[in-house]
Length: 48
Image (cartoon, rainbow, N blue to C red):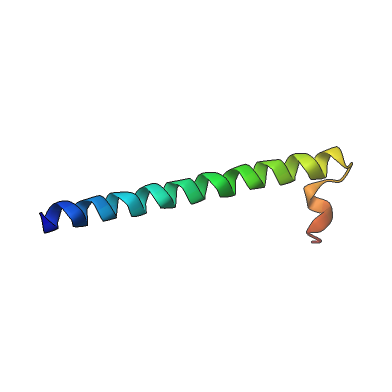
């Protein structure tokens, strides 16, 4: 029984990690589109 609970908790942590990674990816894509729509290049923000 304890093993089953621990397995479930590990699975939940993995699912949560994947959800956060997907949210970060969506935010990155949305930000890139917003900056492009505003007429800027991403390279304008990173001098070098």
